[in-house]
Each structure stands twice: as C-alpha cells, then as structure tokens.
Image 1: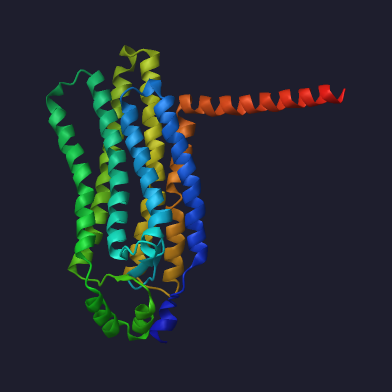
Image 2 (image 1 turned 135 degrees about the vertical axis):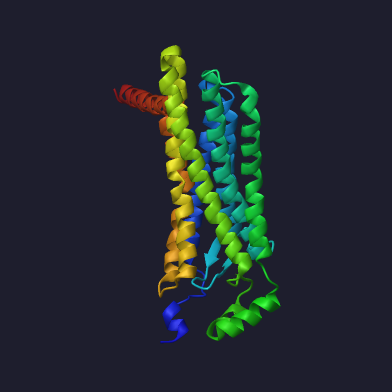
Length: 332
C-alpha cells in the first residue's frame, strides 16, 4: 500500500471546517462579550477578583478571534504540516509559522491566566486563616512563572521552523508523493520531527501537567481551609468564597475541551493512521467550542450573572404580555 493510500491526505480547503470556525467563533464572540459585560457591570460581590476573571475572559475572547477568524488552521496530518486560511494569511500574507507561534502563545496564556485566578483565590482564602503575608513572594514567583511560561512554549515552536527551501528538501526526501502538492499550496509550514519539535511537545506536556497538578493542589487546600474556618466566617463571606471556588473548578473542568484535542493531534503525528487528517479536523472543531462552554459555565455559576439573565427573560415576557394586551384592546 502506498503512503498516499495509507495517509489519505486531502490538500483541498476543508470548507466545512472553515464554516465551523466562523460559526463557533461568532457564537463565542457574543458569549464572551456578554460575560465581559457582566463582569464589568454586575460583579460587585467579586471585589478585586473580578479583574482576574476579566483578564481570563479577555484572553478567551482574543484566542477565539485569532483561531476562528485571523488564523483558521488547516492541518495536513499525519505529516506535521498545515496552512492557515484566515484573514491574516489570505489578506495580509502572514506566514503560517508566525500564526502558529501566536496561536501557541495565546492558548498557553489562556490556561496560565486561569491558574493565576486560582492562585489569587487561594491567597485570599489563606489570608482568612491568619497565615502570615511572609509567603507572598511565593505567589509572585508563581505569577511570574505562569506569565512567562507561554513565551517559552511559543519560542520553542518558533525555533522549530525551517526555511521554505529546507522544508521542501525534507518533504521531497521523506514524502516524494506529496512534495508536488505541497509546492502547489500558496503557503504552508512543515515541522520535521527533530529535537526542536520534541522539545515543544515536551513543554506542552509539562505545561499541561503543571497546571493540572497546581490547580488540583490549590483546590484541595482551599476547600480544607474553608472547612476549618467556616465557623468564624459570616454566611455572606462563606457563600461568596464557595461560589467563586466552585465556578473556577467548573471552568477548569472545561479546559480539557481545549487541550485534549491538542494531544489528539500530537498522537496523529506520533501514531499515523489512514484517518489522521479527519481526526485532526474533528479535534480542531472540538477545541474551538471551549470558550462557548466556559462562558455558559460563568453565567450559570455566578448568582449575580444568573439574576441578570433571569431578569432579562422576565422583562421580555412582561413586554410580550403587555403588547398582547394592547393589541387585544385595539381589537376591541
């Protein structure tokens, strides 16, 4: 069986994937914008924590706009290659390699900002237990690490890129059946499996594991701390901290929608199959829905936000009822 039959790579633009980017990106944009509005104007009980939540929501919005409209990544797996079909590629001729670097940075920054939200909440709850502020430097170290780590991942993928001439040379050597089709593409990026790419995969794995372990430990410590001091807190303060903590936990539980597809795509490269490209497209479609679910979670888990939505629904019902009454009056 030939390589082409084994891999079944389609070099045509998968417009079903492009349309999905537009649809999911539009829905995510409006939901993210609505949540940002709620955080700014309807979050009095969140105190200063709302700025951390706002930063995370803005990072989700920027990441969605980049993926769904500006970049629109199209994979050519199981060959570790692809191209971009978004505005920045087709209109402004940005290279897929540069867009991949930006994409990697934004995804990593999104996860790490969520980790910072957990760190900020952990600091607030620990302070209620009269733990001295001498450990503040530990939080600053973690803040710095979470903010700088995305630069390390982005730099690793940036260093993995080769010149077009070198990419074509390797493709002609390893995949001669596809070299001509790659040459017919307007623009693409191929990442050969070398030490640079392995380092990138290692950093992605480390970053995901780091965030998971860190957040799990923080959640455990926060819950045990609240259990110990709940008798000393007012009902208002206890409920406020528990609401924020539960919301953050559910938000974190939605992150696999974003990073599990990344690992699935990595596996299509490491363990290539006949359906690798279709699997990668499905993974891309799933990952773009993360922000939609995250926004819904934020709205449903914060009582203040729920009240705004319920108020709007009630107001709309009353308005429709009033309109029907007026219409009936005119008929009479």
